Image 1: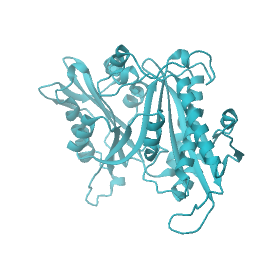
Image 2: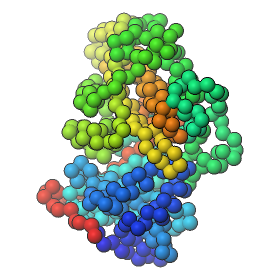
Image 3: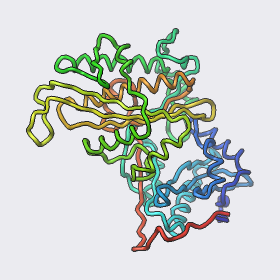
Image 4: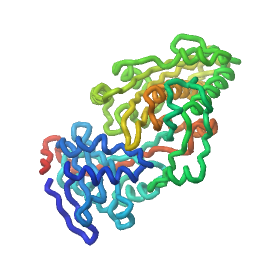
Length: 413
């Protein structure tokens, strides 16, 4: 858009392909080297629906943020806010975000709302959201950790010591990054071991009062490997959309997992996004508990005698700065009866086990996943996750009755 705004600390300008090395340098200092931004950089500078801007200081790009259009131009998505360590504490982040908010409000008139996600632990980002008029809307559980390459040998029964979750002090310092995130070392075999222990415990407890079925097969806590055979099954995009529709009808949902929270309309946009993601792995699972004593539909007083949980997940493996990360999301929903939380927890565990195996098979060096936030405490207690949530912030733009869809988006230079 031909942006160039000078200040005492650098110049705000468009980011171009020639800035690639400076952007790589910022990525190296973010998320312990596990940043994702280089996988998107070419799209940002080549495609008209993205507006990457940065701050140039002494001839080098030292800050970056991108505004992208989604949901047919109705949602402005803010992402990739990065500031080089040498330029921090100079107000660069606030300048960039205020600049892009102003751009959306004054020139990109098709945008009805601005959104981005951040971590519950990232107090600076949450303060910045408030300063720019964005408010917290949704949240999800989130977890991420590094797994050593030698542990990612392709299956959860790999030989060798599982390792320890605790890091040495030197490892902790190496994992510490500028946005108050620590990437702990959690070997994938250890993660899988705990998941299987939790599956065995939950199935064992439930089996005392009910028959536990997954995808039509009865689960037996004494045969955990057979449970693994009843894993969530590979699904098509249509299967996932049907699962999402069922979840929406059986459980109050205030989140939108399918399409990275960038738009509200599940169909057809979500299907297009899922189908278009290279290497996307789609799964669905059905958990049924029968003969649950005293179970009844919430508010109806009728004994249903059954719990039915629908869940889906989608995930893929991508390159990061110094390896590969497997990223996945799990969503669950069920009829609101006694035992439903246990069943949803079990369903999520099955997805965890499958995706951790996929990560190992892909030789991923780190794992990141999102899940229903009302299960966070349960997963923290198990030792699988830490007390972290991903927060979506949003600002609705007042267009004063303007017919936004008819207003053209300005072109970039």
